[in-house]
Image (cartoon, rainbow, N blue to C red):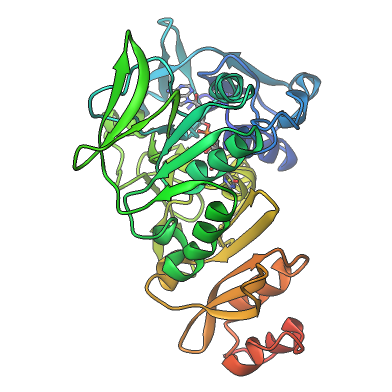
Length: 414
Ligand SMILES: Cc1cc2nc3c(=O)[nH]c(=O)nc-3n(C[C@H](O)[C@H](O)[C@H](O)COP(=O)(O)OP(=O)(O)OC[C@H]3O[C@@H](n4cnc5c(N)ncnc54)[C@H](O)[C@@H]3O)c2cc1C
């Protein structure tokens, strides 16, 4: 394989941008190309449902790197170009303008796309999804005047964050969720109910166990959301926040192993020689869990992205970070670290004041912490991660007691 061929990163999101950085940090000095389907240089998405949507963050503040960085690091970003075919045996990638790029190594960092409402009315004017900066700007335009009837379909992270931003502009907000408690798939009923109470206190009409039958419209514009049973919730603006689908198409068509994401080992290598995958699209073997996990969160794109870049550059990498994510809604800030798959079905142990929304929730298995969530309690995430990483056996009574420093509990490794 000719060594002159570039490393090609497919996808100019956070993971792709950090991978370019990781490859350069690891000393890779050869040609480096990022193929990005978007018109803009890589930017971070979390503010799109928070401060950028709320009008509190400038466009510049969400860029991963300033434009000059790509030039300084000789990273050639092809904007507005999509890869349409991957041919691992020829080490070639076909782009949507007919060009073929040969690669030395390729990284799939194609992320995920928002799941759209498949029922009637999903394409009416006034129905929004939220993934790109353009989506967020359009939604902000629809919300900023206030006084509108906003219906959010989906009570997950993005749905709830949008609800908070929409209330911030003084709109009337209804959230329709399929589950009994918001966020229960991510953090369980107990912790999810904290968010349910938060939104109801802020005037959101939160209707759980509610299935949407269709979106109604008049003259091509949304007018309401019909729920199972026939009720129609009137709406001027509808936001569909029902999850994201990993962009595995290139990998599948090329015959790579895909199972709910592109499967890789802990060094981000897929089943095809010289093809790697990272970020939302990848289902990466985790050495601690001894199984692949697909993590759809910012910190994973950030850290695993860099690690994948180092791996592309030829460094030995075994990625074993503990999954982490955060949210900001109204005056509530939260960080979660841990293995959701181990925490599922476990009732959390609380340390602090749940009613005041200042607490840490811990999920334990066999007296070991497998996940922790701090709500309006700060500078504890490192200690929470240490508890998880050391697999220390903890005394639940001491863990629940805010007077006992968390650092003391991480001592007894089991
Ligand atoms: C509104 C919003 C809010 C979020 N908030 C949080 C949060 O609070 N906390 C948190 O932890 N996480 C949050 N996330 C999740 C986080 O942003 C993602 O995990 C992260 O963006 C994943 O990065 P990525 O680079 O893997 O994928 P993406 O960001 O999806 O980037 C993939 C890129 O690849 C491009 N692409 C796809 N296919 C091709 C192709 N064939 N050719 C060329 N380019 C292609 C896409 O256009 C896109 O630009 C949020 C996500 C969204 C959308």
